[in-house]
Image (cartoon, rainbow, N blue to C red; front, side, top):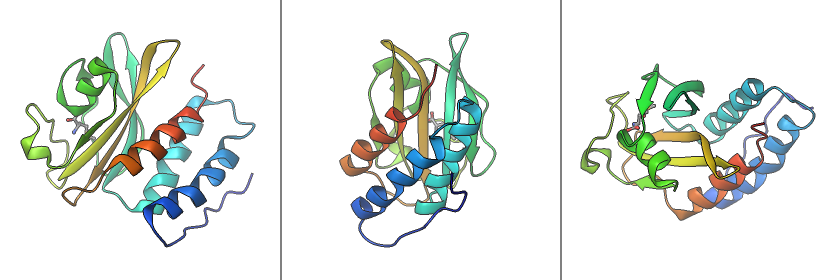
Length: 158
Ligand code: SME
């Protein structure tokens, strides 16, 4: 496994297309979930320089902070609360162009302006969410949704 990430410039699509094989390489042969979540968060943060990239895992009916890159964050989120808890409850990706307009948004960092949350579903259960925050408004769109959903599908959560 190569430990260096090759950062590329180009369209968002080109950046994801170059990143996905590298993430596949990082995950290959490594069974430890925390190690893999940590490297996926780091790879995304390095390529895209977003404010915050990380995972919350479902534990005892709460989301609990997992591996992430970025400023310190709230550790526990209840189902239905904030963007993360809403994505979990609705079992779908949520794109929030302006966090101030999302009722109940949990402001872990005051610098966050827009957000995308991808639920990780295994055996019909949400087992985690991938949360990404940006300092820019309107950062995320369906291109991010498609590729980030593809990236979480690469991770073995069992
Ligand atoms: N903004 C999220 C909370 C997590 S932090 O952004 C890292 C939410 O509303 O669920």
